[in-house]
Image (cartoon, rainbow, N blue to C red; front, side):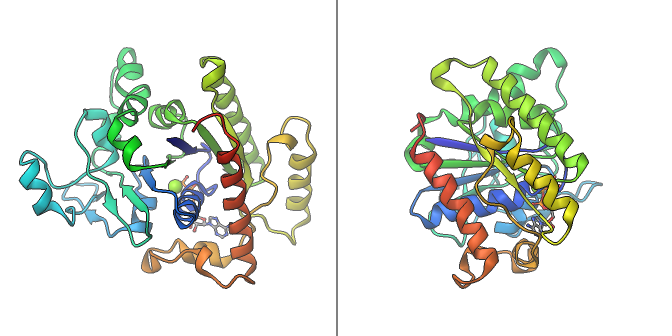
Length: 293
Ligand SMILES: Nc1ncnc2c1ncn2[C@@H]1O[C@H](COP(=O)(O)OP(=O)(O)OP(=O)(O)O)[C@@H](O)[C@H]1O
Ligand SMILES: [Mg+2]
């Protein structure tokens, strides 16, 4: 089983957009995919299913009742009827939700429970958060049911994104090219290297690539910044061959009101579809050539 984490601590860089695109694209190629939303904002979850709003003061997004709740309760009468990625950290059994995309399941986030997961003593953060996702995903049931797991993370360097890096076999870093975003990119590259320093040679975290996103092609400073990344001795070899430009098709397909649309369903001649397809093709190529199977 291959596990792709999508991370960049700078907010709004396109993590959820890319998580949706890559998980949908791999499922359309016939891979059995499970996508995990590890962000308490639950933006990715809302792009696949209708989330509920909790009764808490924050009125957070929480998973809806599972559509197969009655059948599952016959087998597991103790279950609450809802599953979220917070369950990994509490050792609970999880039941993924189907989506409208064939071969693609979702474990949604929980605006109520994910913030609680990070509220642990610093002496316990490694065992209770950092290591917990890796351990939970080793469960044979996941390996039997899925070929690829895609993990969307929140915009921080906190315990939850750290757990997603630790669990992953592969990493994608989406980034804009404005100075703040480039700072975030370099921070992520440092986290990637630090993660690999603690791993053995046969377990490296493979970087699928740095994916330039929201590129405004007509803005000369953006073009220049992208070229710097592509030519840079440090970043150049790590880049996706393509990019995602700033296009309304990408933001439209993320809109909750048209939750089920994918840019991959646009006509083959559409430039947004072509950019998206090239991203998926590169991911497929990297997964096929990987030491992690
Ligand atoms: N290439 C693009 N063109 C146009 N809009 C985009 C593009 N990529 C992302 N967006 C939009 O930008 C916003 C932020 O994108 P997204 O939610 O994917 O970022 P994120 O990194 O997940 O954010 P956060 O850090 O808050 O989790 C969304 O409204 C999304 O629809
Ligand atoms: Mg997001």
